[in-house]
Image (tube, rainbow, N blue to C red; front, side, top):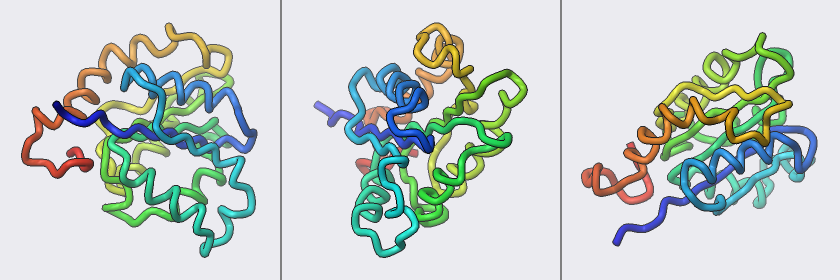
Length: 179
């Protein structure tokens, strides 16, 4: 019997309990079949994100870094991810900070920024050491809670993510550090 993958959700929306959080949670459930083990709604951390000595933030960075699957979600602001998310991601070590599979998810008001997750968020996640097995996902705000908005992406990405999370397929990898 293999251990269930540890799943984390990180949300960089300045509004607490946002649609972005709902979208990220929905995607994490679709990919893992379970509720996330850890949800980090960065808006709730407030000024602690600016305090480099914050033990709370350091503990969250460690927990997210050790997750097998991390859904990193953010609204599209000025064609990229938010400064709030940047503050959090800056805490991770380059190359080794994220040791598992990461899925970039961004929400936006219209299709003009559909490439934002692929062009802005995915490169940061790979720089931090994550394996990003599929293209970044962009969902229109108005469809954030509609499973159909995720269906095409999931049809391609679900098997790739599952393969990376299955230790039987990757016995040479240390536990908790797929790909």
